[in-house]
Each structure stands twice: as structure tokens, then as C-alpha cells.
Image (tube, rainbow, N blue to C red; front, side, top):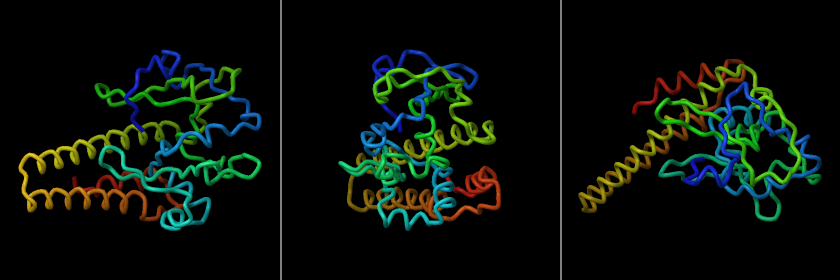
Length: 233
């Protein structure tokens, strides 16, 4: 999720690469689940998150929508799924003891916390930053960024994250441009056409990257690239 804030207000002012050491190790959280209650609708899910959740839970995207595990969130015109954090109860995947029931295949934003990603438009890549306000653990140990992320096939994972982010940014600009054109031209017919185009684009993104099941017997990243190649825009 893109945040229009001063980095000095939310981080230690540094950017970290995969081989850098950072004070991110929360020591298994020591029973704390504060971040699982207070992040609202900011845990936006990407296709890999949905692939891992549906595969490991044996539930479809639609079933997770129906049982309120996830919900849809509009981010700059693009409709994307997010974790559903219920007021007073926190994340749907928390146990009564305040532990994560999907920890082994938790979403990427949960996995890197208390780190965040800082995307660089000019180089089409990203680095990490340490969030200083969201985590309540006061003494965190230093850990190498790559070890903290702890995902298999890290290189493919990082390439996917960057590609997905800049794809969504392109879709957001496309939608914002269509809405702007419709407003400038005016008229119910033209405005309706633009509105319908935006709706169709959002439905295509949801259907192709989220609703359509991924084959657990095949490499996720290969399947993602195949779907990207079929995307018409």
C-alpha cells in the first residue's frame, strides 16, 4: 500500500538491501499481536499471497471472501483484496491466544513486518525501511534482511514483487486518466463508457490474478508470468 508520508516520521531514515543488517527481529513477538489488530485495511494482498492462502487452507478466493477472512479494498481506483481486520478482534487468522494460524504461509506484508518497502520509480525496484511506530517491541535484535524475509527462491520473489507493484501503479494511472477524461468531456454517455471501462478493468484484474485458481503442482512465478502475458492492457 502506498503511503504519502514523510519517511523521517515513520522510519529510522535508512534504506536497506537484502544483505544489510536491520533491527527487525521481534523475538517471535513474545505473545504480542498488536500489529494484527491495528493495521486496518492496509494489508493489501498480492497474487502470491492469495495463491499461498488458498492452497494451504484448501479454500477458494470466493470462499475466503464469503467467510470474511479477506475483503476488497479500493486503492487509487484499483480494487484489490486485503486482510479483514475486525474491530476488537483483529485479523481473521488470529487464534484466541493471539497467535497467527497461517504463520507459515502468511502474506508478504506480514512476513516482512516491521519492515516496509520503498519503491523507486526511476530504477523500477525497491529497498526496505524499518518502521518505527507500528511495532511495540522495544528491543529487537539485528538480523539480515534476506534472512528475516525467509522465502524460497528469493530472487524470483523480489522480481515478482517489483513487477506486480509497477503493474498496479500503471493500472492506477490508467484508471485515473480514464476518470479524468470522463469528467472533462462530461455527458452521461461518455462518463458511463469510462465508468464501465474502469469496472471491466478491475474485474479482469480480480478474475485473472486472484479468482482463477493457481495450480499447486506448478511454480507460482511461471503461472504469474503466463497471466501477465495474457493481460490485454
